[in-house]
Length: 519
Image 1 (cartoon, rainbow, N blue to C red):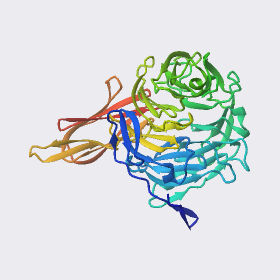
Image 2: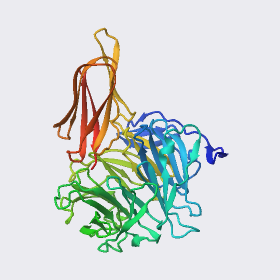
Image 3: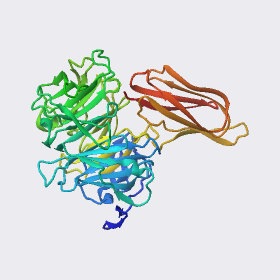
Image 4: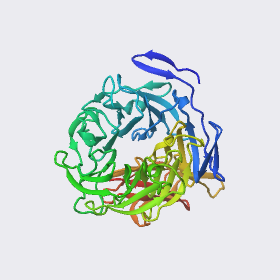
């Protein structure tokens, strides 16, 4: 690898380094796939490799940890923020087959490198935390304005915080409820750590966070929250609909708390189980009926559990969560972060890579696809993928794997190129086409924009259906619509959270696209 060179201009640092190798879309065949960036063979099934960026292409050797993403509503650009020991690398993945390393966010000046670095996004701002027991100075919560990336092109830049929130010095993770506008630092230490529980932060002014309260569930172990998900609840429990609910992964149990009033939280259900070793992280189904949870250490500590175990909770009664399923993978690996999109669960299972499960029947999970991001045979159980981000509008999934790099993957059954289109022929036999652009934003709440393009005048009907195929909206039904780009708005304010299907009929052809309403 060639060393970095730096140029200072107008207070902005421009970094020059080797560009990442561009990977063409490669389909997994016969259970294997060769990565042209490394010539390594990856075991896989039902997946496509869109691209891969190695750590050396980002200027470091190892230490990848968490990953998150940002889809810019103004430009349509999509970015991945990849954590590592000394900072955050920002990649433009608008074209999933050609990621571009566009920015570096270094750790807070004076703080130490950290194995654990996490990031979430709210209103074009990134909020970054790191965990450490000590250091010359606190890391705090870095607040980064990402809007500078909208017009940026060319050399990668260094992004500095607009502020550093230091009421809590260090944190294992940060959680953001985009609907309520509150962040929650979890697993905190130093400053007002809230005992490692939920440290609530008001983001009314995204560039100037304000402390809002501590939420510590002492019913669970030491009240420490390792991770959490906070939502405006829209599930079937009528007693709590419309309230802000946080579900914490609190070492020995899951914790369900109504945090609508930050200074007067209401502690609801607790979910414990005899074989709990380390309740690490969990994620809700989109209808808020079920919770999918991992236990990081059960496969490592218990001889009775060797294969990756996923726990499923029925939380239709938030005061009384009930475990309804223990799903065991065919493979032996400890598990880390998992996320839900639609009826699919995306699991990062360390050395076993990314696994995608069908969760349409929570009592009977089935594996759809997997990709081994860490093909080395002899390695630490802590290597491989810690996390993934499955919420890109393109449909691609970004996966961090240490020390392997960032993989941009796609289900073999999906088109992750960013545009779905069909080719047709007019009466003269001249090829023409119409296309349905990716809805934006997606996921959305409550409104999303749907664009389509006609190369010829045509009768067009565009509708939206729910997961059962029932039509919930007709967006347009027009005769002889003029050629060109057309824009529609879909408002799901009166609909429940879930996956919906946009259907476009024109010229005897049909295009469909999934959209996700998250409330």
